[in-house]
Length: 119
Length: 106
Image (cartoon, rainbow over all chains, first blue to last red; front, side, top):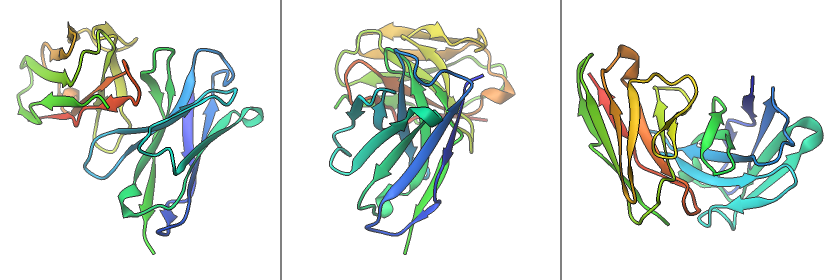
């Protein structure tokens, strides 16, 4: 059964870089037609798509984050990562990793990783 | 970006009620709409995709309809576990965007 698990620091200082990794298990990470993505949810707020990546490295970024966001993959470890630079308190949120289908809805989600931004 | 507007923001209901949630897109998105359920402290869970197709394992009391820019999610008879927040998402045009959610409460 497909599972996604986020990992990374729960606390990041303002102006620093937020880094998270999502490990995929129970599914061939390199299967075509699927993308892997990140969605975040600030406390009490809605959902916001940050970006998506395919196993081969093709990426799609939300323009709102494009200047600060980098996604990468490590196919040998079936995982993908997020790097968000110059964070502010507005970046504090639960960050979810998820699988995107061919048509780009999110069919499987990780449990989420809470990130606090504070000095 | 395509804006997704959900109404109402909060819906008060009782077990056994039939409820309908609405999602409107700022432009036509054809059938490219998904619905998610999120319980407190949990990740979203896919309920419906392509406007009306139930994800495997989702109870048949959930149904979706609509086209163009206006869509609905109906729960035919609320169960206790259905009290949650529901989000719609368009995947017609990137960036993929979500509505702000409808909270279904007792």
